[in-house]
Length: 73
Image 1 (spheres, rainbow, N blue to C red):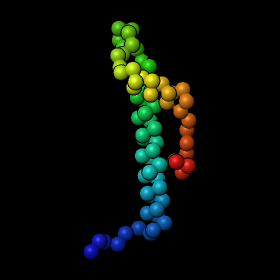
Image 2 (image 1 turned 45 degrees about the vertical axis):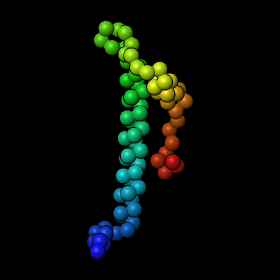
Image 3 (image 1 turned 90 degrees about the vertical axis):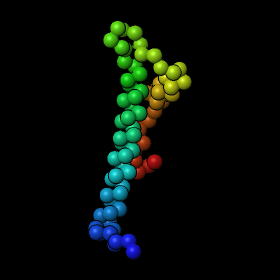
Image 4 (image 1 turned 180 degrees about the vertical axis):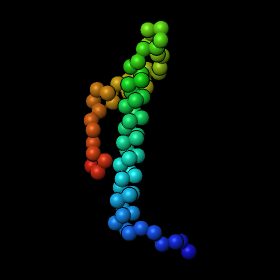
């Protein structure tokens, strides 16, 4: 038999909402950092080599990406 929740249902709901929002923000940050890292030059002033399809996808995030509130996703 499962244990009943230890917090009020409103508190549990708000914690879950915040956790989802934080996960969305983390994912957005990872994608942005990955896209930006592909723009960096390596130490010897040559661009890092990467797959062309990945480069196009990351560039599309930088060029046409837009911010969407977590509650609107």
